[in-house]
Image 1: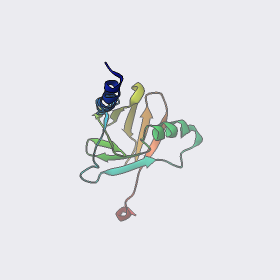
Image 2: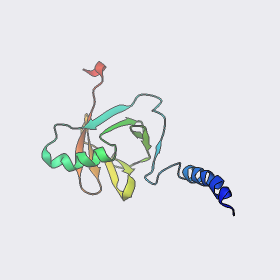
Image 3: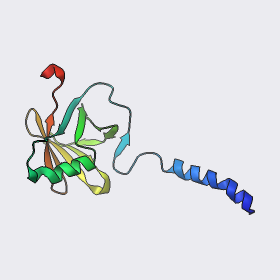
Length: 132
């Protein structure tokens, strides 16, 4: 194969590799449009004590520091997670690297975000201007 032909094939190979990498990630999440209707917004408890900080760090690094719950769907930013409902009312979310997060009801205005690695932090329901 001549050198000039190799150079002309290089952009095609790069484009094909880029297109092949697009799509769903292995974490069970996918980028989507914003939810069609409004859901409940939950954010980490910023007043949590120092013992909860490892859970806060995991929440931030996995994009779960603020989530929207809309029916059975869980959104973190523009990522929709495939949440599995559990009998106790918890929702399980598969994350990258085999990590799992549970959203566990802990009261009317509170959820516990528990990671399979042992860390946890409270999520508080964000009040809308109408609720204040």
